[in-house]
Every structure is written in C-alpha cells, then in structure tokens.
Length: 96
Image (cartoon, rainbow, N blue to C red; front, top):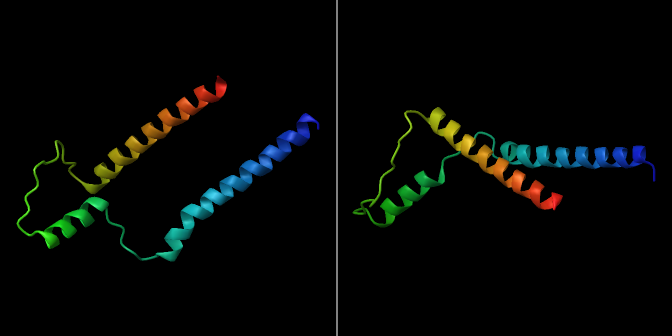
C-alpha cells in the first residue's frame, strides 16, 4: 500500500470521527431544544432541602465568581487544562 493511499484512508477515518463527534454534540441540543440546563449543584441543593429542610451546609466555597459568565470561563479553562494534561500523557505513553 502506498503512503498516499494510507494518508487518504486516515483522512477519511478522521473526517468520519469528526462528523460523529459533531453529531453526538448536536443531537442532545436538538432533542432538548428550549430546555433549561442547570448545574448538578443546584439540583442537589434543592433535593437536599426537600428531604431535610433543616440541613445546613458544613462547607462554603472559597471563591464565589461574580457572574455566571466568569464561572463558565473558569470551568471551561479547567476542562481545557485537564484535557491538555491527559492528551500530553497519552502522547508520551504512545511514544514509549
């Protein structure tokens, strides 16, 4: 098999995987269009107060972001750094 045929085959596979990722991302948004997405923390807090109305949290956050946008920015930065570390480690393992 020539190198050109291999690279075309890899390109087709990469494009198919990219299309699959896009479909997996968009499908839940289309199915639940108009739905409100809340965080798990808010859901857990409302469920706990429903079960035990007298419950008092034993810990509070060290830093409370001033707005939802900044909170989202911090969360996505954390996710990007984690993905970068995992990608780096997987790359190092593959190289060995």
